[in-house]
Amino acid sequence: MTVSDDPASLSAADLPVDGAELAAFIAAKLCHDFISPAGAVMSGLDLLDDPGAQDMRDDALGLIRQSAAKMVALVHFARVAFGAATSSEQFSGAELHGLVAGLTDGGRATLDWRVGDETFSKIQARTLINLAYLTVSALPMGGAAVVTVRREGDQLFLVGSAEGARARLKPEAVVGLKGERLTEGLAGQWIQPYWLWLTAREAGGRLDLAAEDGRVALMARLPGASEQPAFV
Image (cartoon, rainbow, N blue to C red; front, side):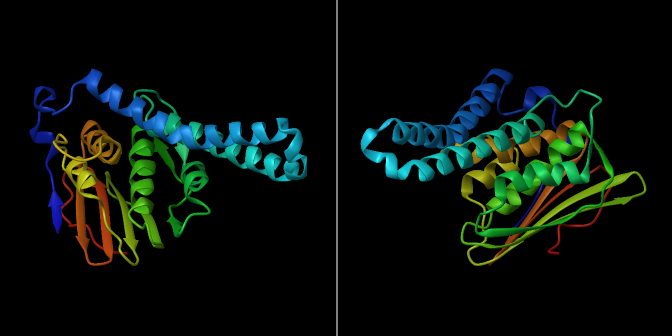
């Protein structure tokens, strides 16, 4: 399966989701992401308060520490991944690697970050880390996710390639990556892919997807590029 879109052909009036709906979807996703580590912190605190569970004090502290670190990583990632792209803030490749690794380290998939320590604008950074996160997310059973960046003249190519057993994107994600409104399925699986599509469009670029058995490739590119997404 190969999907390619031309976001430049759409006007703001053609977008399937308005600003208020988009904000609601993103807020719901962030609440969902935070509830698990926040709940784990509360569970750890309950153990510390339980007189009959004092033998589990070290385990409780470990759970609190790990969950708090997860929440901090989520905050740092979300600030760039979902924050306004109009600021003049710049990010290095190393900074962006840290944001993605903070959420993906310890999972079944490995992240091979082949991005030089160059500087990215806010909207480029937002595109890159969302693309990288979705590439890793395409490997629920584990595998290798490779993220690369290259420049050709004034064109910037951001490529994520996922390879592993049952590498796939859920149907809701494919709908989002095509810039379409979700009509059935889980909105939580759709909103971040749609946000990536919208970010690429806002940057004046486009988003391409290729998928086959055990492989998924995503590529965000600036206008004028001609090559198709390929596996790394």
